[in-house]
Image 1 (cartoon, one colour):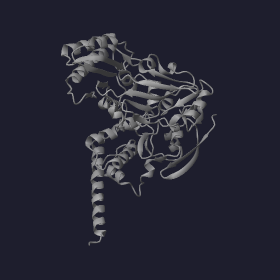
Image 2: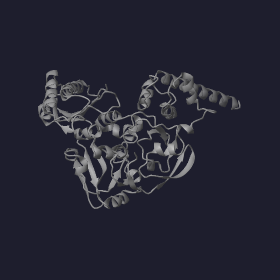
Image 3: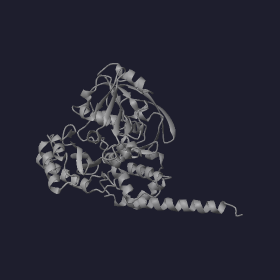
Image 4: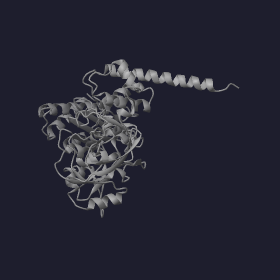
Amino acid sequence: MTELMTLNTRINGRPYTIQIQPGAVLADVLRSLGLTGTKVGCREGHCGSCIVLLNGKPVNSCLLLAAKVEDADVTTIEGLGDMQSPHPIQEAFVQAGAVQCGFCTPGMVLTTKALFDETPHPTPERIREALSGNLCRCTGYVKIFDALRLVEERLSRSVEVTKKSARKATPKR
Amino acid sequence: MPVIITDYQKPRSLKEALELLADEHGKTVAIGGGVSIVLSGAPRRMRAVDLQWAGLDEISTNGKELRLGATATFDQIVRSSSAARVGNGILCYALKTAASEPIRRLITVGGNIVQCYYWATLPPLLLALDAKIHLRTLQHRRTLGADEFFAEPPPRVLVPGEIVTEVTIPLAPKRKVGFEKFSKTANDYALIHLVISYAVQGRKIVEPRVVVGACTNLPVRCHAAEEFLEGQPSNISLENALKAGQIVAHHVALRRDSRASSAYRRRLMAVLVQRLLSRMSSEGKESQHVEGGLR
């Protein structure tokens, strides 16, 4: 038996102090905490179903030693939304029919979140590049790309609405 | 199966890391991104010294050379304006082909060149760009040229307790550099890596480097092709480009690869060399950076 080590980290905004095996990978630690939205597919970094956000950027949690997320911010799919109040990206995936078996979806959604946090209007080339680490064997990606277009449209609209309400709220001189 | 790490240390400085690595030779392993430790599944017990917090992730330039800290990730390099100055952007372009974005956030300079898997992207680039690898133990420091570092598997080059701290690459803005990765899909392990670089003096090619990787166990320079190219007109003819390709295909010793036969890879190599040389030759003076193709 190896000695356990203490890990201090934040997962979905909540601080955690947990005992882990020193060689454990993040995906296994997350799933042992009940955060089973993080899927484990290939365990080699090819499929992207294990993707989580580390300080806001997508990483393959099956290749990442959990000890490396000390004092970091980890976001899993559970941190975005749930059945009762889904995140707009999750809604867009449902509306576009971008979910079939669903195994790749948590990784796809989190990669999409990071992409739109980085740029509100990604080019088709940038979208392809950003999603290149997420494999989907069901949809053929067309519906997933549709979902991303929906996300872009909604984000643009919400920015316009925010601007309009800001203009209304500004008193005229 | 998780790897068996018996003790995980997180030193906060290089000195502390070197002190930890000086203990228990053979049982202590330095960790950069940790990817190869996770993937190796080596059934041995080890003590890990994670260099993530040791302050080795700097990327900078002094106007003559680029300095890459050992724990700088490929993603940091791809986004770095300093790194973009090497070979007019070829380093950033090439490392972008190494893996998908999430994995590029985990691959580090030190890990990639010390593990030196046959498909690793950085080693052939360092060889073609005349890079230097800086090594440290608690007591000593030394610098090796890429030729020397990759002459045998790098773990054999390192003495106990020694780590790569930094890699320096000459900016050499006047050298032309071209890169090709050939793989079945964009993010797949490469079947062939090809890097060619040369300077031009008086419309002649001088100091050419022709480096092949992925189809060999370690990245190798093809000296026969370099000798052939030395002194050739920089406006290289199709005939000479073909000849150079044939020389590379003839001289490079291939590793076995279940994905493609040796005959296929030799033919492929000759074609890639010819295409890359032709493209490099036809590039205008303003743009000396030649991107490879992904197929």
